[in-house]
Every structure is written in C-alpha cells, then in structure tokens.
Length: 92
Image (cartoon, rainbow, N blue to C red; front, top):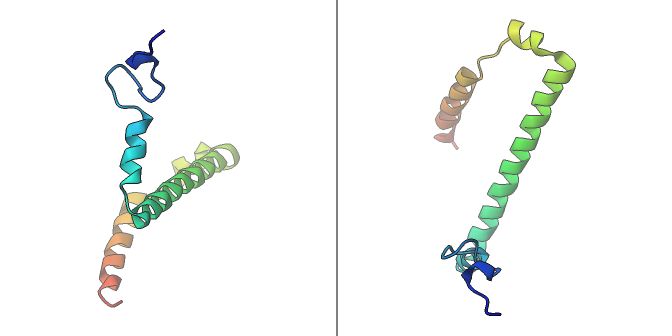
C-alpha cells in the first residue's frame, strides 16, 4: 500500500504541515533564542501552577466568603507596581 498524505506521520491533516515543520522552525533558531523560549515556557507554566494552587487553597480552605468580604483590587495594585517599576528603572 502506498502511504498518502493522510497516513504520513509527519503530516497533521491532508496538506497541513506536521511536526516536521516545527522541527525545521526550531532548528533555525540560534541557541540563545531556544534558551529564551524554554525559560519563557517554564516561567509561564510555573505561573499557571502557582496561580491555580493559590485559587484552590482560597476556594477550599478560606471559602468564597473571604472573597466577598475582603476583596483586593489587583488591577490597581498591578498598575501601581508597573508604574513604580518603570520609575525605579530610570535609576538603575
């Protein structure tokens, strides 16, 4: 039997590039960019794990009542942190 595009393990769907295209893309990157990409992926995964863990602890241990009565506006806190960091960066 002849293998057509649908049976090719390197092809995702008929006519669509498969994992081989990703390998070619990553092979063309310099080593520093691959390290940067890996660090970004690890940071993102760690951030999601910690955020999920904190959400689970708040929900299971402290309950939603705490969130209803002691709400913290994280948008304002985040904006103030960014402004402060931008201001302090000038002095570094």
